[in-house]
Image (cartoon, rainbow over the protein chains, first blue to last red):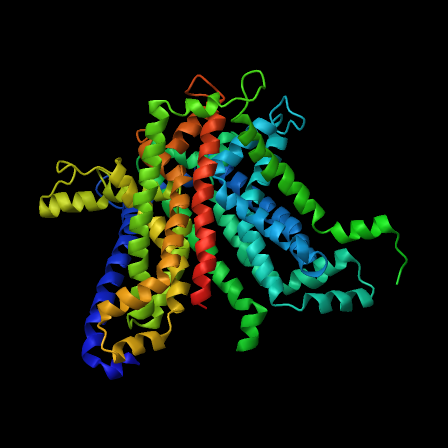
Length: 271
Length: 288
């Protein structure tokens, strides 16, 4: 629009924009190209996928990766089960609790992860009232609780945004007058309606949990994050291959988030 | 409607939030409170400021200072670089497709932190990294004999910029979108140059958003540990790395010092986040 008023002035603006954009693309892209190229160098003098083969065939990789995937899925499911009812209740029954709930969901962004993990170790050690670090299984549960905590800000915001686009009150009353109980309302009315919002929160949580390092290392669980650090310490080309794999997963999750957002009802209505 | 007695109604009223509140109390509030109280507890459980006073030992002061400096500079550079890129794609007459591309990529890059990010930079600018090798073999420039090293303060900042800049692009783009076209047109009609428009109109309006973003980026980098740990081992002894080692029981003889370190970290990130939240609310007044 301004270009038609001041054609001479818009040209340098455009040039600077292109330069800035180009520098940003270079800064973003070069490390990715670097890690990809490096990951192919394992065999002398010729590019090969040897580093990937070595990583993928490493039983440690398989077990830690699987561990983290399972952890991420458990975290997502548990997070939804915890946050969806709370977000719904705040909308229809207890609006005065909203500031409190929002404050709580912001806390994991304010308190450094390492401090929360430290708190867990002190509070749930074997001589405490709730000795969750006592066995491998209960430590796994504790780790997934830690991940749910980390995911609270993203999960709550995603689900609350989803609920905002609905007439929650009417839906609830309609379901109730048809004889639905709360479980039915949550699972069969609300969940499908906020499904795309829940999905975008879920994928973000998934990508965060998969590469998480501090919690897993401090609770001493065999997760993917600590495995990557261990490999980084004693191998040359495998870390780059791992970084490529991790980047591909992060990218995949972000693409899925965008797809999920495109499915959202308020976007669909506009088209 | 079914008859309900008082207890059942209260329970039904709270049934949805109760598990959430219980979980938050048990796995977020209590562990953190435990740490905070621990910072004021002596060996026999008595109240004391001794742990806090112990933070004054030179080694910890140096670590805090390093972390604060790293966070300040990486936040400052992140704010500047992210702002320039966001301004270029929102205000710079670039094809809209580039804007969508940068935003999507920033979403990925802001989450591509931690260990893999360190690997990517080692593969690029490490001693055998792609860029290092190309510069040496094609241009005869050996950046390592010129004093460059990834495992230094500025090397770490260069790596941190990857997620700092991405986060900045993500949070400042909505604010830039809020700049009204009329403001620019009004300024131009009154004879303002592009520079004057930015200096006297856009930047003052954006100032709370910029300062708030700075605080958020500061906290973002202050709490980080995995990237630094994977990149430098423990040669850059950030306060997070010190606390990590302390929790694992590697260093520091006095265990209660860990509580004091943790408390100081909460205070620092707490202040930074409060600034962010307050300023974000203020900037939303102007920009809708």
